[in-house]
Amino acid sequence: AHQANIRILELVASKLSIPITKFLNNIDHVGNTSAASIPLILSEQQATFKKGDIICLLGFGAGFTWSSILMEWS
Image 1 (cartoon, rainbow, N blue to C red):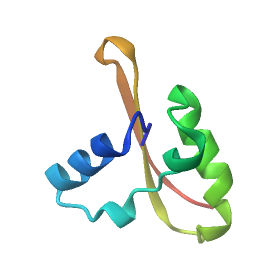
Image 2: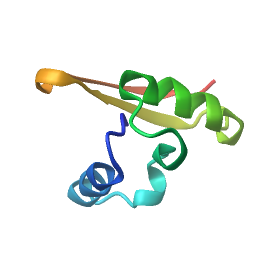
Image 3: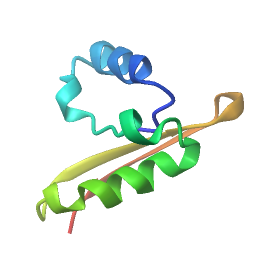
């Protein structure tokens, strides 16, 4: 997910009853990169994905705009 800060990711994980370990994040070394969060983390973590993995991408923007996609890694 787009990561403005770790507390937001922890809250979303809690509300969805998904372990925080399922949320990839790199905010500790890149900070709030806004819309670049998703491609940055995909680039950094691509070696950990296996063909057939199901990945949910979430983006949030100014004015409460948002988007998401559920995809299969190939």
